[in-house]
Amino acid sequence: ASFVLGQCPTSGTTMLNSYRCTSSTQCQNISPGYYCYQGTCCLDGSANSVSYGGYCTMTAQCSTSGAICISHICQCANGSQYNGRACIASPILCPSNQISINGQCYRRVTYGFMCNYTQQCGYIGAFCTDGICRCQFGYTFDGSKCIPRSKICPGNQIAISGQCYPFARLGEACMYSEQCIDKWYQSLLCVNGHCVIQMNDDTSRATCRDRRAEVEYVNGSVKNCLYWPCTVGYFCEYSETQNGGQYICCGTNANNIYGKVKVYPGTNKPLDCSTTNGCIFLDAPNCVMSHRYGYKVCCSTMNC
Image (cartoon, rainbow, N blue to C red; front, side, top):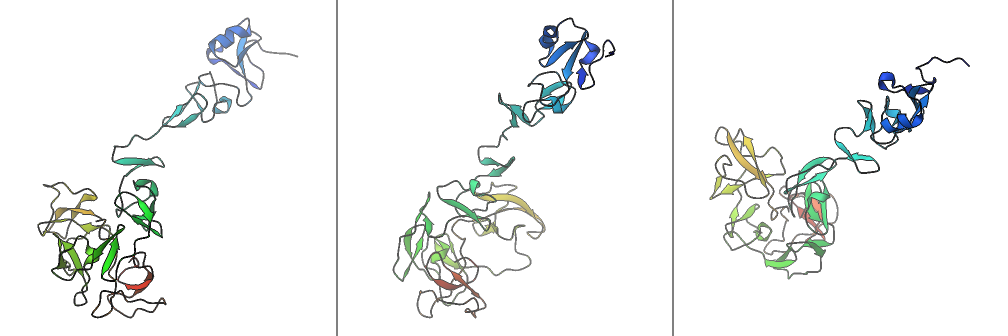
């Protein structure tokens, strides 16, 4: 069979600069996988023949999983690193208040705050549903973790985070907005420890880009995050509707994730329902299963 001096077999690859040799040991001392063929260092052209760090001319020669041939060396691409066996994706370094998920940083949050993944919810038993960190059905949040819902409160009280709190009417003391239920007023909020009337929406009122988020107020005024930092759970964004353009704090208050329930006149007992169309009230048109009361109620939202 005829051959040409200085060339490798058809299936082989010549080492860069056509390195001359008299033995395969000389070639292997330069790069593993090469052998001496008719005075020239050659590489077997078959796939997966070059180990990590070895000389290569094509990626198919690299035997290490994930390695590619860069500058004639089998190595890991940018964004990955060698762990002794394979090239793996380099971990994303996130700030301490964030977590790496699928190669991106997401903020760590607690119960009641907005989320994209359950991993963001930093408490035992967490579950990200409808974009909010909550507990799974049948569980309640006790302030640090989700626990089985076993607390049954009297008819004049409501269970919040595993504790019973009395219902409150307009002007009465409260700790949570869920306590504020008054048959004469549809929308009450717990502000500064008392149930107050919620302001009606209007076109000039500050709103957040995410309709699920709420605006943070301080002393009755919209907080300007250009001068004051937002409270944990709120984030600074620009609003064109506030004061002709202002930076405002938007987020989710863990105490205000539930809608308002319709109650029996003269009582604080939620009105029950049985069918999807069973609620005929404009302010509470949804018949939903309530995790707090344990039966279907007429609710202003889909979560009561």
